[in-house]
Image 1 (cartoon, rainbow, N blue to C red):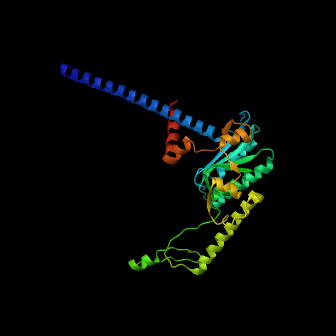
Image 2 (cartoon, rainbow, N blue to C red):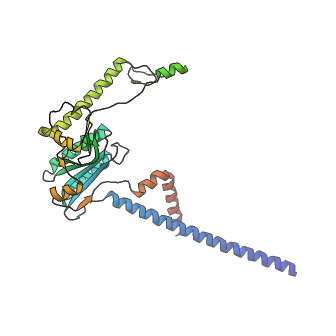
Length: 313
């Protein structure tokens, strides 16, 4: 064999050897990142499990249970009936909790969600008559937030808190004048004369408006009844009480809408005589945020990686 052929052969072997080494290094790094990703995901799942079971069936020593209702009350927000009621149930069921504080900072929201939370608070108070449930208002407790608050034994506020808004609202708009100017017409087709009730692209019907007003009046009457049942003789006879008006905390005490000035800490310390607080509020955890951000594709990729590792091992 000539020296030239020998050199070419050696060069080729060297290149192949280096290529093999590079492939091995790449495989090692892929394996490393897969294992690291798996460990991170397992940790996230563990945190999710721990967060979802906070305060449930756990002996924490004597304490005051705290549940926070923050923001707009709706099925898609953290202040939803499912999570709040699960937190309430866990707090009442724990024999180590001496009382429950529901901290509210909400402008209101869904009357249905508020009603479900209210009814569960009433049910649990009857089921555990020796375990008090007090509400503490921080910035605002209005509309649906107050609907929930009246289910408590007592309501504590700051003197500058905003309380009330015992009313119902339905908002809309009309575009028919603008449509006439632009030469635009609505071509909505319905089966049922009230199917497109309050359609902003059609002129308002007095009959349909009257139907919607009657609906709101019925819901308002339900709200008023709940407040009267919850507050009883503490309510003062004021003509503005159920008009949707909002008052500051000091005035709300005078009207009987709330009971006294207080904070979470002061109620736990001075009313329950148990300053140790345990937060039972279910909160969106890391895993849920990751799932919402990356969607099902992330879960599929994770499953694929786990599957590949299993085959390699």
